Image (cartoon, rainbow, N blue to C red):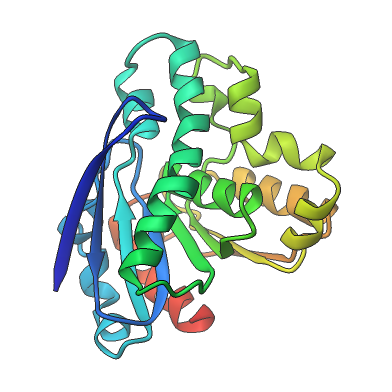
Length: 241
């Protein structure tokens, strides 16, 4: 059963939608690809691929609109606005989406597993590293973890704090201590349009800070496309949930 909701986010100054599949189980937040909305994973068969896990009550899938990725893909507004929006998006996830998930779970405070493909992988790793108090693991699939190349190779303070490979090297203190109790899977194919070096780079940065992670490099038959992610996600959820 699918349930959808939406609200106006003052943080982002625009609406955001949230969809849910399942009745109970480990909460899993799936970030869309760059231009995707909350229901993208259903249209592209990812929900169906995970259905045995949903139906058996092992996982409860959630997905929210891309918002910042969509603005990046559409080149909406100025570069500064698009970089600002990534930072605001992550805070909207933490302070709006996460409470909505917890309310839907009946107040259950179980830490959430974050996942996504392409830019969704970037966002899943970002929220794990930024908010390890509410996220317990991330599964990044076919990720691009340095998104400056989509932003004319520019950066800003907003993008720095939204980008884990930029802020992690200098991270210390309680946030890093908690993050070191979490786990990230960085998975990538080697087929068309995949960026294996980006995944290895992410694993190296995480490892340099003592954050448990594993980089899984799949074969050349696995391309940067939905068939790959339909195969990857249920396998990793079965392992982690």
